[in-house]
Amino acid sequence: MTADDRIRTVGEQAALARIIARLTPADAAVVGPGDDSAVLAAGGQTAITTDTMFEGGDFRLDWSTFADLGTKCVTTNLTDVAAMGARPTALVIALGVLADTTVEQLEQFADAASAALAKQAPGVGVVGGDLSVSPTTTIAVTALGDLEGRSPVLRSGARPGDAIVVCGELGLAGEGLRLLLEGTPPDDLRRTHPREMQAHLAPIAPVAAGAQLARLGATSMLDVSDGLVLDGFRVARASAVRLDFDRAALDSYDAPLESVLYGGEDHALLATVPADAVERVLSELGSDARVVGSVEAGEPQVTTGGQPLEERGWDPFTR
Ligand SMILES: Nc1ncnc2c1ncn2[C@@H]1O[C@H](COP(=O)(O)OP(=O)(O)O)[C@@H](O)[C@H]1O
Ligand SMILES: Cc1ncc(C[n+]2csc(CCOP(=O)(O)OP(=O)(O)O)c2C)c(N)n1
Ligand SMILES: [Mg+2]
Image: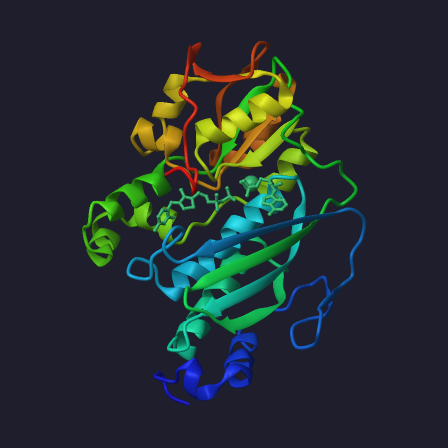
């Protein structure tokens, strides 16, 4: 086999064998990849989520390498599981790729997915998936998580008096997208703006913080994918409260305010925690976590210093 092998020459079986060989096994798997289904030793309540990325609207192959995509699809799904307060256990990854895709690209995808799991959720593995030929490169990931006996942390539990905590970065991924859209070649941007490029193209998030926040009594949580304000509105509506962000806290992030508020794809965890839990949250989560505001009584709204923020953010249909 050479570096130029394409799926159209080696075929599905050989390509799959080469991908599967590079995946780290999941601790929870009784049967891993290779049979008709995987089998997990499931404990109690299971969190389950799925997310699909299409070339064009979700990523561009002239911006992202297959390694970038392997990292990104793992992180975006792990944070959805984490945002329920669950501990991720396993992923299923379905790939639709052009027949001209090289096996080396698939191997780079698998290596990056394995590395992203090792970094963010050790013991979690890819237990199965699918490989098909498609005119549009498509990545569909399903993630599972174990609630370990805890109640799920919903969007609807925020209460007036809670503090708003963000765990992870805000604004860098949106800034990365903005820079790429300006047209500078991605390889130049990787040199001049490494943090923004990593946040947008190959994000890593504080996944373990989800279960930690749940243990520490978080009353609501979600992962910020469509922008802090738009996702904030989801919590505000579900909980029938107003979220008030502190302007100085928002300014403490390493990106312009516009990207912090509306950029999206941060995959930071936005949680509300009772005021008396804040000290423990900050000491246990360390520098990843910041208090960014407070939950107030009132009409469902998102404000900063009491001033309403416009409800906008990422919407794939109206962009
Ligand atoms: N086709 C669908 N059928 C059923 N439920 C869906 C479908 N698409 C989205 N949902 C549900 O709608 C909710 C919002 O979806 P989404 O915005 O993708 O969530 P998130 O931003 O957390 O990934 C999720 O609970 C998701 O499971
Ligand atoms: C080429 C390209 N254009 C635009 C974007 C911006 N973008 C795509 S998806 C998304 C937000 C999150 O995606 P979605 O599939 O809605 O995730 P979910 O909210 O379901 O977790 C953003 C900001 C991008 N990543 N790449
Ligand atoms: Mg989510």
